[in-house]
Structures are given as C-alpha cells and as structure tokens.
Image (tube, rainbow, N blue to C red; front, side, top):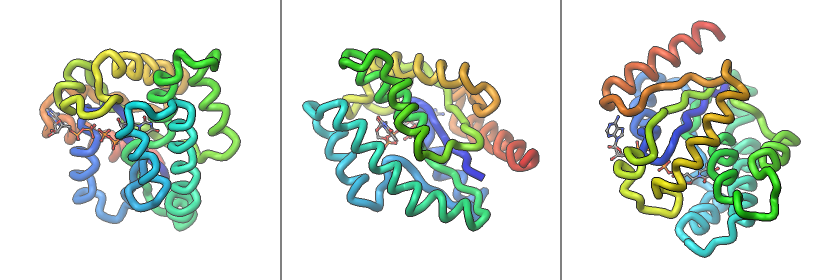
Length: 197
Ligand SMILES: Nc1ncnc2c1ncn2[C@@H]1O[C@H](COP(=O)(O)OP(=O)(O)O)[C@@H](O)[C@H]1O
Ligand SMILES: Cc1cn([C@H]2C[C@H](O)[C@@H](COP(=O)(O)OP(=O)(O)O)O2)c(=O)[nH]c1=O
C-alpha cells in the first residue's frame, strides 16, 4: 500500500514523517525529491536556483519521480510493503501547477497530471496537512522560492482542487495544531487506512 504525506512547506510533514518511522518501523519510508540519487541532486540544484526555468524544473522533478518509482516504490509495493512517502506526485501538480501559471501552458496542472498518467503509480491514500500559507511560510522560514506566502497560497488552492477531484483518497489534518496533536491525528488516520486495507 502507498500512503503519501502532502502539504505546504512548513505544514509539518517531515516532523510527522520522522515520528512515524518509530510507530510504523516495518514500513518503507521515502520522499520526493529523493535524497539518494543524482536526479534528486539535480532537483535540489533547481530548487536553489531562483533563475531556474520552471518547465525544465518540472521535468527534473518528473525524472526524479520516474527513478523513484522504478528504484524504490514499485519494488517495495511488489514485495507487499507499506510505503510512506513524504511528498509525491500531488506536490508536482500543486507546486509546478502554480509556478507554470504564467507559462504558455493553458492548464498547467492538467498538463502535468496528463504527463504522469502515462507512467505513475497513484497513491492509495494521501494524508494532507492543512495549514494557512502565512503560518507555513513563517514556520519554514521562507528559505527558498517555494516558501513565500503568496506562492504558497496558489499551491494551497491547487491542493484544494486535487482534494475536490478525489475526496476519497485524501485525509485532511488540521496542521495548525501542536505537533503532538497533529501526530496523534495522523497516526489515527493511518491506523484507519490500514484497518480498511
Ligand atoms: N504542528 C506544528 N506546530 C508548530 N510548528 C511546527 C509544527 N510541525 C512542524 N513545526 C515546525 O515547523 C518547521 C517545519 O516543519 P517540517 O516538519 O520541516 O515541515 P515540512 O516538512 O512540511 O516543510 C520546523 O521548525 C518544525 O519544528
Ligand atoms: C516533490 C516536490 C517538491 N516540490 C517543492 C516543495 C518544497 O518547497 C521543495 C523541496 O521539498 P522538501 O525538501 O520536501 O521541502 P519541505 O520539507 O519544506 O516540504 O520542493 C515541488 O515544487 N514539486 C515537487 O514535485
């Protein structure tokens, strides 16, 4: 089973993801962008470059996803493992859908979802940590171009469109709560997901 964690920078995904490793120690924990491949390194170069071309950045993230699927996700799922990924394809739809809003692409998010539909492995469930852009930007320290409140507001709107399109796949968690409360709710949601599997 593939469960993904999604949310704005600063929503608390990594904090939750780290804590879950103790509770679900048999699961395969992974993330996007990957941190163990040259594809992921190329992505992080683009993240750190304010002049990086947005369309080229989309394809770097997508290349990293293709490698992540073949090297990590599909083998683990084929072995019957529970896979928990900190960010996955919804981040591409939400973030690059926003960063390409002024491009020649008429409907960027739909274009990106179309590219992925030819090869991706959709999540079975997605836990969405919901937080307002101002809180998210304040927590993340606005350290990179993706962490600015105005941009995060567009990303959040894209996430809401994804949730509206697939309400049964998403579990919304109020991430403005304390870390302990957020983690309690995420673990309860994950237990429910696994019980229904
Ligand atoms: N529920 C929370 N309430 C307040 N601060 C939080 C919460 N969750 C995480 N943080 C803090 O916010 C910052 C970003 O958390 P992180 O888990 O890295 O978020 P993300 O991976 O979603 O960007 C960290 O300093 C973390 O300690
Ligand atoms: C996976 C992914 C991440 N991102 C962005 C979100 C983050 O700002 C940045 C790096 O992701 P990450 O290292 O997960 O940052 P954070 O832990 O703060 O969420 O890349 C995309 O724009 N598209 C993607 O497909």
